[in-house]
Image 1 (cartoon, rainbow, N blue to C red):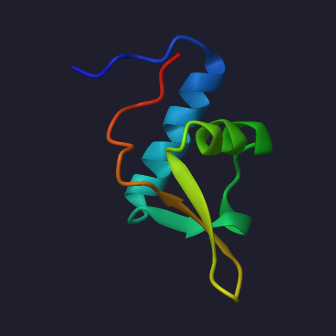
Image 2: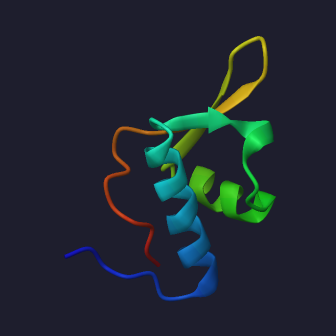
Length: 71
């Protein structure tokens, strides 16, 4: 069983990862309604990355992000 996040920020980060998984692993950055802090925390943990597609930016799940974020 996956470890449950301990605080509100971790719950929001887990929700963002689930959102990305539901949309095939990536979504346009402008369409994501999560705070910059949550997105930055996932970037710092290297669970997601930003790709420049020349038509905008995509937030993409990395290969090693099978787990929910934990502290």
